[in-house]
Image (cartoon, rainbow, N blue to C red):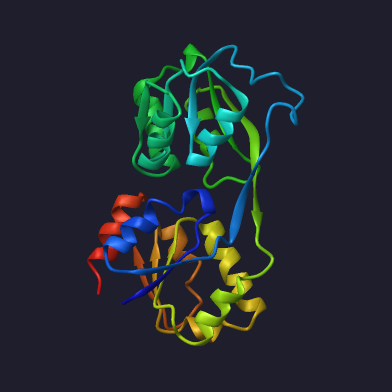
Length: 242
């Protein structure tokens, strides 16, 4: 059985891990960062101010979870970067949900096709550090953009002992990465424990080229990039390899 390490935050590990098991993988977990949410009380708010907002932008399922903690309003349309965030939005009660099925550039293009700049502000519940530059992209098209920092991604300070042991003994054969952040944190932790040589010969599945670029200087890896940046295409990619 092929062993596969999942590095996603705990809340995002399923159903990806379930899909992997259906492909015959033995799945291990090491969430190299986790999500810490802030709620309205911590932000000194009764609830998020939605005055003048025409739509909510979600660049991850975590954005949906953060919004849930800070607003009961589900009347606004939800514009989502991909199918996972769109599914989270529907599950959370949003009825008007649009998926860009891509990255933040695709999300900005979706907004341009569906919304008019003069109709109101675009609210983006997000972390303090985000991938891409959605604000610049939309601002250049005349949209009013507002980002609310509602959660933080907290990096792990060390690999799990189990992960270290599996790598030392060459038990892990595949690792999947869904963001440059998780890739960089993982590599830093690996270097910290002098385990870089243990990566040689591994297959690394990357959600995007930006993820794959993080491994450019690591020799001996088989880097494979998903055709589209979503979970379904990652699973297709993994299913296509032996």
